[in-house]
Image (tube, rainbow, N blue to C red; front, top):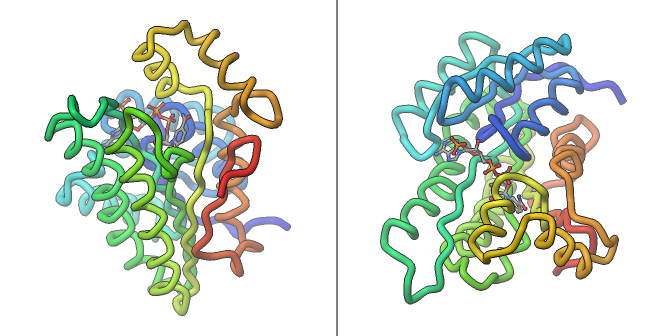
Length: 252
Ligand code: NAP
């Protein structure tokens, strides 16, 4: 099914899953706003999309900052048109066992994942409800089910599942769906940092992870991007409030 061209926002799209998602949505024919903290890095993704014949702009913003989010969404609407696809992907980790976890570790993770998704969704839904069509996808994680050293991150990722279900209930009557994608182990800088924390080479860390994944491989950013492409498509309009694990095997 060909897609009606839309304006899509992907946060944290300078690299990793966000960059793969920005590329995939551009390939679907959407104009993509690449939002990330650093302008140069966001621009690298946007330029790569344009070089392939797509439409993309770089918009620097910290998703945890209300004023920056308001300004970014206004700028996107002005330059590309009303954003009706939002992918809340920006993320950070500040892993530590509970007894070592600092207030800052907690607040930073909550700020980017939960507050960030809240601020971006609140700003974007104004355009979606006005257009009578919208797709919101937020990145949860298999860590939502609990993961040693990630009390902050797992709480935020579980929180995003409740957030998503509530958005689905509130926004459905305006033609807006909200879903969460919960990746397992995906090869990005984030999992590379986790390998460093536990003192393993990234290769050994990936091999150990793959041995415990039913499909016997680790995930790629494109695996997640493909799922997001479906959830943001026209034909996914009757799928809302769901959490899809993209983890190479079943999770609850
Ligand atoms: P990544 O490679 O670390 O990329 C995250 C991106 O988010 C970076 O470009 C980062 O910018 C940006 N970012 C961080 N804080 C931000 C903020 N306040 N405002 C705007 N952008 C910000 O991570 P990833 O592995 O692709 O993960 C993407 C999402 O998937 C995250 O939500 C993550 O929690 C989730 N996830 C990942 C995995 C996995 O295995 N990789 C598994 C489950 C869920 P800087 O580079 O400037 O910091």
